[in-house]
Length: 232
Image (cartoon, rainbow, N blue to C red):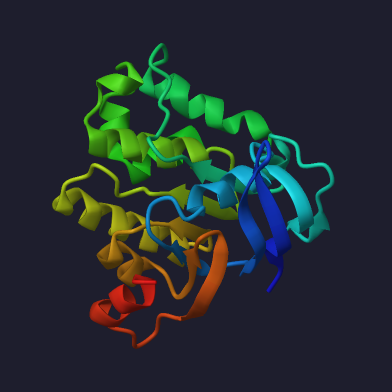
């Protein structure tokens, strides 16, 4: 298995504020990994650090096995890491089709095309010429995932993907993510919805006050036990 993303003793934050403290984590090709923790413990800062939004002040980050110094905003996409951001960030002035096409800007050649995304999410084909923000919350999440897939990633990072979604839509999301994983896409799921994590991930890290305090394999762990692991 090849390494897609790795943090080694990473320290990062914003301005003079340090959010992450000596964080170690790694995601290999084809893995399904979850990062768990309460609000405000630094989960999104993990994403912001490898995107270059948060400032790296210590440790090392590797993307696709290569050390990144300095980290630049588009490096992750070019290295095969795509983000489905918290809040989805659909561009309101663009149609569904145009939002999807933007996702191909990384220029990576691989199987995901506009037609294949439409096959995965038929509703997006039906509403291709609709403004992206005119979709329902669940449809916008499909659009955000489809846009990320258009960059043909080896690793798909999803930051709180269940936020604001009805339970039936979260169930549909779990099926989609399992389908992507079965097709070979690695997943990094930053999430507080235990049911989604339990159905999708096979390994987990628990983050508390900017530090990894626990990690393990989800095989055989019940949802009740998982909640106890996160209650730190």
